[in-house]
Image (cartoon, rainbow, N blue to C red; front, side, top):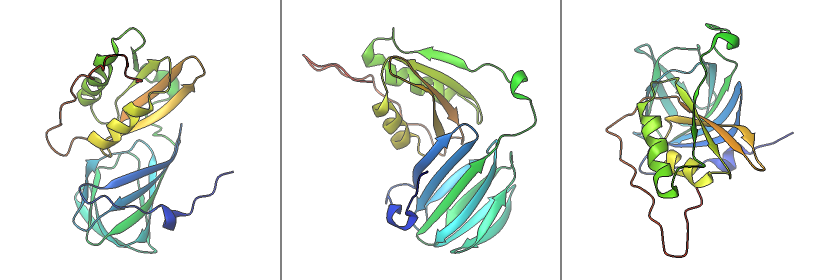
Length: 208
């Protein structure tokens, strides 16, 4: 059992919207989405039904081009696969719950996600290779990263450089092998920033 105080977790970023992932499990994702006035989330679609509850502020949602206002205390349901984006008219905090998956294709018929095994890739090249794979995905596409340790710095870099665009899901979390599914959940809002190769410092190695 886990309990969260959402009011205490509200934290804004003046340069971009700030998503805080609270739970990320197969078929169940819980996020606290924080937006300053004027910030927006680009158009995207989710394979699951999404419920959005406004904790504070005033948001305009656009689903398939149709606007709807959402104010503190109100909740909206977004159908699986519906294209939507949103704009903050005030500083706002949203509780976002995505549960279940689209029933369009049974799991047994779903294509296998490509695996990217980083264990044999030189450490300075790992981040840039993962970003190349992510940037090549269409919305809803995914691949699986395999590593011999938990690549937490990579997850943080994706959140920083591709905010709101990717979901990070652990399939196997150690102790010897880590397998993580990286799924593109939203398209790029602007030209993507490139990721330089990780420099090595004498006597030290990158830990990703």
